[in-house]
Structures are given as C-alpha cells and as structure tokens.
Amino acid sequence: HPSAPTGPLAGMRILDLTSVLLGPYATKILGDLGADVIKIEPVEGEGRRYTGPQRNPGMGQTFLVLNRAKRTIAINLKEPAGRDAFLRLAATADAMVHNARVQAMVRLGLDYESVRKVKPDIAYCYAVGFGSKGRYAGRPAYDDIIQGLTSMPSLLSETAGKPMFVPINMADRVCGVYLANATLAALLHRVRTGQGQQVEVPMFEMMAEMVLSEHLWDNYFVPPTKTKNRNRMFDRRPYKTKDGYICVMA
Figure (cartoon, rainbow, N blue to C red):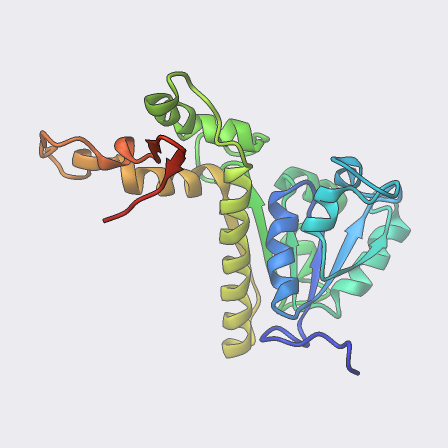
C-alpha cells in the first residue's frame, strides 16, 4: 500500500501508554522511524489535547506535534473489560512504552510482570521521575522539578542574573530521546535473542549525567585539579553589534 509506513521500524508494533510530553516525544520518534505506534488514550482523550492553540477542539498544537505518525484508540484501563482489551493488543505488540509511575501501572495490572504473561518477549520500556533504586524513588516529577534538581536554573543565573528555567521543556525532551533510544536497544536485543525485557529511564539521573558531564569540571578528578581557568560554558553567548547580535565560533 502506498501509504504504508516505511523506515527501519516498519512492521514493529508499539503500544503507547504515554501522556503529557516526555513519553509522547519518545514514541513520536519511533513513529517517525516507521513503527506502527498505537496510542492508548482515556475515553475523554489525553489532557495534552487541550493545551495551546487549537483550530478544532481537542486538537491542540502541542498534542499534534507530539503525536504525529500514530494511531489512537480510547480505552478505560480502570475497567476489567478495558484492561482485557489492552492485553489482547499487547499480545500482538513488539514493545510497550509508558511514562506513568510504576505504582500506578501495578494498580492497573499493567506492570511488566502482568504484561509479559500475555507477551513474554515484549520490550517493556518506561520513564520515571527518579530511579527505582534512588532515594527519591516513586515520587512524581515534572520538567521544572528535574531542571531545578539538576541545577539548570542556577547555571542560567550566571548569565541571566537570576535563576531561570531553560525556556523549552528541556528535561522532558532530552529524556524522551533517551527513552526512544532505550526502546530501540530493547527491540534490537529482542530481534537478536528473542528475549523481552524491562527497561527504566529515570529523568533525574539522566539529566544529572548530562549536566555534570559539562559542569563537574575539575571535581571530575579525586582530588580536584583546582584549575584556575573558568569553565568556558559560562562565557558562551551571542555578541552584540550595532545592528543586532551575531553567533561566532572560531
């Protein structure tokens, strides 16, 4: 069929239980690579449908950007019949992706152990705010919280003069890319070995690694090097000219 998906993931079916931004951003990437992404929404529709400008009700700009290249179905997962319908779909899937708290998935009976009973080789991948083995395990998180905990507002104060968030949902998008890559790795493992697995992507730990790779600086060494030169990251900025700003890199 001329409209059939193409790309490296063509023929792969991914069940998308994600919402808001991080998860949908990850599954959008997988859909762009050709996967058959089936988005599972509550009966009233995912909340992001109603965010931002919209020409038609429930079709907000943010939702459209994050959910292109997907099909969608409404299922009430809190009802036994809805859960059963989802598990019938899961039996046909190669991967499942979500960004809900693990406790919520356990309550729904859609945690990894439950889903693998109907699809033993499924790649079950999910993002959480904090790693399950860390001190903040199980707590909810949003982009602003993760930016704050990984010092991004403090770093921006060096140039902005006051603490500020990066003016895009940086943590959600960066971790969305991590989640997409983790899902790709799990699918590759499945193709090579025939085995499924559970993969967790924690926002806090991912963003801490990204920030510290630049800003741990001389504390990377034990003991610290006590270098006298300033981290160049604090001095990068456009240069003002008489008719605007320019970006230059020698």
